[in-house]
Image (cartoon, rainbow, N blue to C red):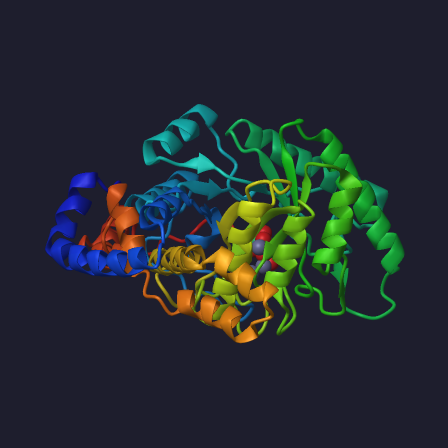
Length: 426
Ligand code: AOS
Ligand code: ZN
Ligand code: ZN
Ligand code: ZN
């Protein structure tokens, strides 16, 4: 199932004049304040977020999984789903694969398919948090951190195999997330686990092509509940520095303890040129993987404000790799991803509205109240017409969620794939 531009174009017609009136009103208002409206629309149009292959089916909890009908059963179908998202939103132009869940059988045809859907391959993800069928050694007691040298070697070899697979698809980065940790005090030596992890990551780094980057993800807890080897940004940063120039920290919004100031972490990493990748989601308690912007939209805006600042002022930091890392238990995964993409675009648009020069002047004048007014003035602006305009210019849907429903996309997927199709992987 593939959407064509005509279907989207037709579904846009009814809302166009309403959109134009709202856009013109907002653009006039913003223009009076000296905002570069065209520049913001262009920045929004350029912003692309990768969709992970594992977010296209219904996730689950340790208590159960409720499958969503018409889920993609293989890599080709996952790419078709991302193609649908991209056609509607024009902001999901990349897919992030998980190995071994998504190993291509025919590379040339997968590359062709990506091209047909207008997609590129973003970071590839390795998996040493599960044992795979036929695997020699278990990761029950850790992978890159293991005290068993042979298990460590197996995990390193897997990561390099993931790089080899990604390389044939045009990926340029490897994301490593480790479940390695302990659930009980005294279970393992912290220092040996960290040292082994550093040694393993350095070997992976050394084995990557010279134009590849390594993203090291951190997470405070889960699946282990006493300690995690790479528990926080400081540990990830230290490991990235130990590996070398092309190793970076990856920030996943759900991987922080409650009330953590994530925008400050983002800012510090960008100043040091080490923010490589980003996983968007939202959470109330932990790694909840909820829809982006559904719980703490103001925090998301403040994070974007630092990202925008960093992208403008920190040439030492590479352009970050953006990805949504979410999981859906009760919603249609594609509808949920449309909501996440919209929330990301809105937060980005609001951050672009912040008058950075006025903010810097207010900061220098120690005008605390004005600083807050500047941020909140941007945050309170309804930027949806700007996001819509960016999408329309690229041939996307005025209202992607409404179009998804009115075009009967889920029904089409169920008809093509069957009611009981379950996403491969996970
Ligand atoms: C796990 O908590 C991390 O967020 C990973 O980035 C990702 O969700 C995982 O690799 C997918 O299984
Ligand atoms: Zn993640
Ligand atoms: Zn996570
Ligand atoms: Zn998460």
